[in-house]
Length: 293
Image (spheres, helix red, strand yellow):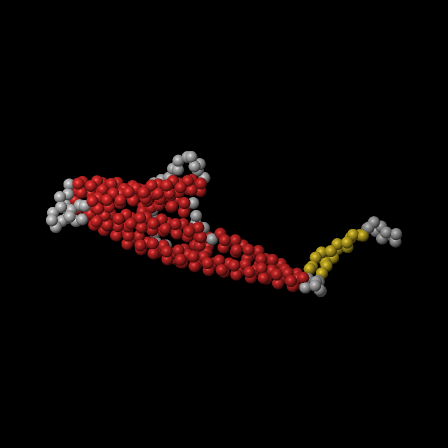
């Protein structure tokens, strides 16, 4: 369910980001159009050309097309989330609007994650119960070698033809099987094989969980570092876009530099959103392994 929720959040923020980018691209396209229509190029300066205007329009239409695709994907993700949660498709999905960037990103220790996963994992608990069960079966099979001691009782009556009256005889009996056709030995061997098999399964499962936790931890660490790098890159690209817009308005730089800055800004923001949703998705997988969900 968490994966569906994070996917819905991601697509919603992508749609919001593209909506803002589409608005900015539309303003820029109108600005380029005005500059092209009023441009009087000097001898050494070609000014704003028709190619610049067409590039601005093309960039605006690309953003609009991506926004339409994002809205469709968001609608599908919302239906999938409703299905997982158990909400009727015709009813609105009421969720608190929490941006991915505001969700906590706390460092997680690999050793602590492994201990929690090994302690809480449901499959491992089931195997441990199976080990106890087959161990008890093995001990029970071995008891077949021991003699059986029990209380025996016998009733005699009614009075027989010799005049012996009704009577009870009570005593302790000892029963030992001298030869049972190796059936006890076969039971012990079979229970031993089953016990060793399930123990091996438990060891393999522990190793698999530990390896998976280690891989997820490395992925989380890498995503955390990448998000910090992208955070700084986004701040720089924002400044670059603002400077490029001011420079283009003042006629100091060409439109291509402004277009490049705008594309880089969108790419950086989308990359950081992807890192955020990957981080929280990986974290939910760790919670699933450890049984913390």
